[in-house]
Image (tube, rainbow, N blue to C red; front, side, top):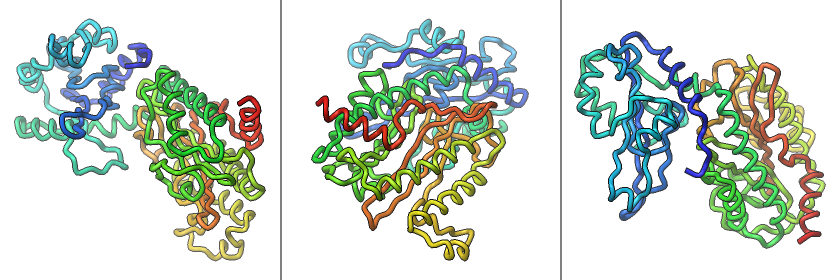
Length: 434
């Protein structure tokens, strides 16, 4: 890993909170992610399961964590199983955790090799009545590929059919959505690295530069600042491509007079930043581009103020939609009389602003959390309104990451250039010094 390790107190506290939420006589299992095959004999780069990382701090494949708070034997109440290394693995793959290193990272004292798991499993299961399984319950998740936690659950149910089975998912969604104080630092670092990359891009973009060259500049800045890389596939969309919400081809030249929509974020210590900025390729917005930009910015600033304790995402989105209606009428894209007659279930603003304004952020860019529960202190949300006008080959989106506190919203990206004038000034300055 490139990042600086996080204090083990985060993981100790997380496990205590989780264990306190279990029914008496329970056991819970967490597995690391699969090593995903690519082609031939190659794998994709390993990325740890976010729940495993949140519970243990162990960033390594073939890891199992067992939580069994009421087991009669203390050494079975919190157990970590690691991949056992050897000379061959050391030569071909490099260093793996020793037991002492795993204890230091996680705060878990009882560490065994994963080869010992099957021999110890009966003793753990015999003294447990309820089993918590950690299937992926992110409501955005859709896949046809069986994954490690799913296969583990099927095997365990077949082997121990008489136990009661429960879901880790709702517990993890509730807990992970409220950030521990020690999680704010890596989130902030991810945002700061993203800031560095954006400022680098402002000095690089000009007519004739290709989208993939911009992506390369961002990647360079991420890696040199100890990020793992991108928190998600970056969107570098110029001109009409900015109206494609998940455009990731990033293969076109940026032309004079276009606006480039840049949606990217650093992954630092597996925590995600999520930034969007829209910048003029030639360094100067046209009047129309500036009007649309300022409209989106007004909505973004007003929406940020609504990210407060007690608000609810569906209600919040409805209120942001009303703000967007006013801006679209002002821009001449909607007519006020038609808006008054619209079907409330199919508001007209959706033609130009068709996505939600905010989602949970954390170890995953679309992090887990219950969007129907009131917002709480410790939640982190994106705030990302946009206006997309295909007939004008113009798409504008602006996005920052917001921490909710008892005293109000805190913008983790407050230092990143946001106002149109500042963006233009920085781009002009880079052209003078180049």
